Image (tube, rainbow, N blue to C red):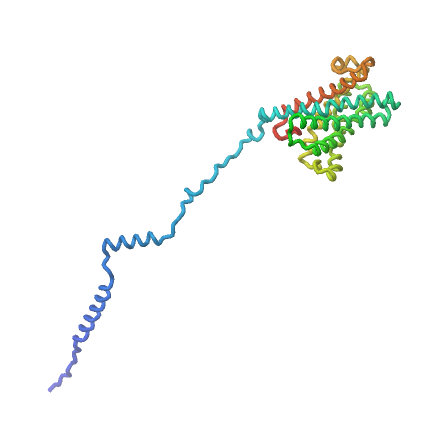
Length: 313
């Protein structure tokens, strides 16, 4: 008799009951989540909108200024008519206040040196005396002009202390060019040069003397006088342009010598001083000759130089 070993079959009832319990637990969890209705979506969207930090519109609050890059033609443009008018105005004022008095003062002091002090025209004393007369003419003419202008126009912007210091600066440079004029002309005429070469050599020589005197005066006088600027690269450019115009004035002054090569002297009929010319008239002619030379040269510079590059800008 064969005895069969009984097989134990596990009951599935506890497993099914366990699964049902888990399913019921999950259903309870899902029942706690609110339904996704249309109203809830709107509320969530509104909550998100209100909780976001406000953003400022950069485009509305700030607008960058337009950039402008000047063309090369604009940078190198010639001065405007108003700039030219101002240059001509300053040129006229300088001619009246300094250039005419300088020529008048030089000629007057030459008469004093030769006729009253007994200095010969080729002496150092004569050269120094005429240089001093040139400087006095510039200083007195400049100061008197601006004092009269302030009194007539009641222009309170004219500071006479400043103008006196400016006059001193220019007079110091005029002393150098005025002192150099007679020795330089004597040297060039002694070489038997044509009139035009004497004219040009005097222009260059006295213009250079004025420039060196102006730079030296700036170096010396800028310390004690607050209205006199020390030498810089910027004012060296304007000093050079002024010295060119002063050189033109001294060159035209050569035309007053009616004795040297009169046939070549193209200025003799305009500014020639003859032996028979009265002393006072000769002084006035001398002032007219320097004024004519300065005006001619400066007018050309006014037209040629760009804006902001000339001494009278």
